[in-house]
Amino acid sequence: MTVLPPGRSAIYQVLVVGYTSATGPGAPHAGTQATVSYLRDTSPEGVRHIVIDPGMVESRSLILDPLAELGLTADDITDVVLSHHHPDNIMNAGLFAKAWVHDHKASYRDQEWVDREVEDLHISDSIRFVKTPGHSPQDITVLAGTPDGVVAFVGDLWWWPDGPVEDPIADNALLSQSRKALLELGPDVIVPGHGPAFTPDETTPA
Picture (cartoon, rainbow, N blue to C red):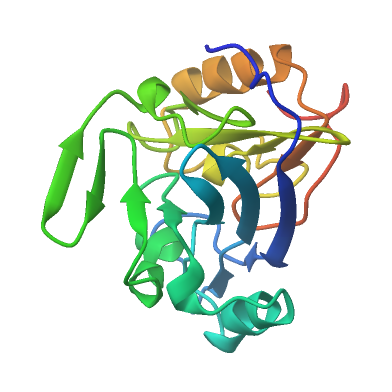
């Protein structure tokens, strides 16, 4: 597990609060919406506008309208981060045609494919990335240093604030290891994959 980002200049907004009624693969008529988030920070190359997990939502306007309220269009987004490759977390990545897309192993834009370790992806001093496998082998977490503390965007490491305790599609031993390592870093806020942001405490499933 990496160290926390040294900077504290990032700002964030949860654009869409997600949910899921699924309890496992093949759940009938399951409804799912991703929690989609926005980060802004300044790098040596300029201001970075980052969208995290632009996945399944009832309407694309749920993502685009809050960005418009911030004065941004889809073409202003410089980076898209995918916590993992499940369709419910990546469905709308194509909205951001000018952005770099980052996952657990590489960064992509147009015809460019740049291999790297996720820990070597440094968008700014206030944003770091760490591997948190378990829900899938490829899961990553974004750690953002903000003026109010460190925010962890964890994908489906947790689906919502209270779990699930046992992830029905995960390697739960590995998931628990990643959860405990993340909690040991002491994030002030966790943004899960399908629910509202929460403050971790002793009741947070690990």
